[in-house]
Length: 233
Image (cartoon, rainbow, N blue to C red; front, side, top):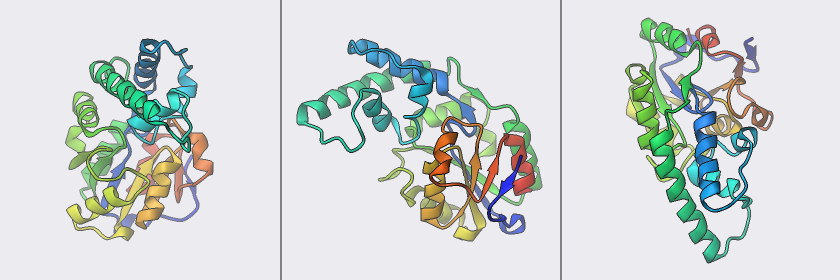
């Protein structure tokens, strides 16, 4: 079901910016497996995938830190920072090898992207907080690269979402004004990014972090990727 708080002007849209995890692809299992492999390596108890899912969205360093039990506002000692950095390296190396074991494209994504692209009025790009190399590798391996002009990750710019730097860079890259762009994502991070950049927002309630959308709802919300067609076309 499409729910609208503010109507997005379809006729003015020129750019759609998509999150990756929880929006285009379900990567929950591979991320959980990689986190648990990291925890096992350091003799820490494994976590349930549903718990790990609540830690996803702010990038790999934050995912690792939260999984190790460090709060976002924790005042870290030098030894803690060194431990987290070491664990991050292990996690990224493991995930690099296993990022496509179970990850798949959500049902309806290809249909919707094909329909949007066929109209020819908007460009599409990906902006993830996942590091750029695995982001691009996943998009390529799952056959989505043909839909997107560019794919950027959490280390593509000096700051990650919800900082608007990535969105602002995409607006300049495409020669688009804020009122002509939409960010599409499954968490409040994406919605806050849109607000910070002054662009429209579309929340995906089927993703990895739908409960966080209460903090920052989208202008429009959808329960299935195919509903993008009704919102953007």
